[in-house]
Length: 341
Image 1 (spheres, rainbow, N blue to C red):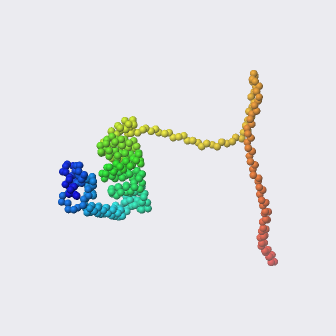
Image 2: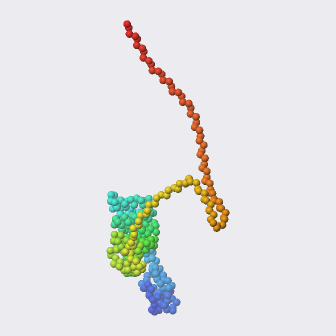
Image 3: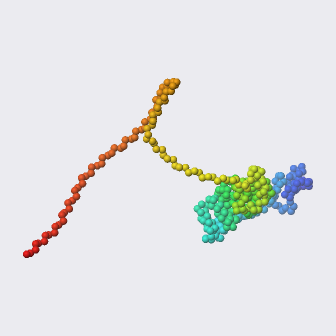
């Protein structure tokens, strides 16, 4: 059958797919490509469309390839499990007595009781970056954003780690995440502008630089942002800010001294006066005035009578005092006998 099909195929030109020429003739069997030469009974399968693929290989080769891929996957899983179970490498280089190492060891002890704390992982990553362990630091930053996806400070630190290792695309993604959860992050705007400037997107870089300066004018200070030293676009940035907002960020607004407030004396309590209110006198009748009824002045309401004092209870009778005991008379000395004559 295959031989007859092979004889019916005309050697007309057709498209070559996967190294096999496919005929587009009117023959009903033209969609079946010819067998490769020197084939020794290997079972090939061809799709009706004439396209080859993974199923066009022999069954023995497909089985061997599947076994090889399975072995590679098993080895990778075992390696990942081994790396996860073993202790961190940087722990071998920590010594007690060093202030930085003591801080790292303290954070590690806290992580044993709170392993899902995003803040602790972020702080540990920052200390490890200061200890010059960038890979371990990046691993801690990833754990921090995995524990709390809205931790914008961990996203920013992860972007700095990627940028220091040359992963510009990942760094840009991390900085964009920072701006998503913290729109006014000045340093994130500045680093996004640096990446855009490196790629040649000048206008986007100027916009991000201007946003960083608007949010925090201190960013042009070298002590706060050392990367400002290599920025050659600052004149264009300030020109953009002036044209856009009609103001200059370099000139601060002037403040006036505020005089001290006058001392306020405490208000004294009003003492009720004991004077009796005076009765208003009736108006005198003038010449040529109509007689009017004399209005009786309204008497002020009588003050409430003071409550009577509580009755004085008589003191209980005191028992009569006992007379003092009579003191005995002192003994008289005996009289001396008269002298003898």
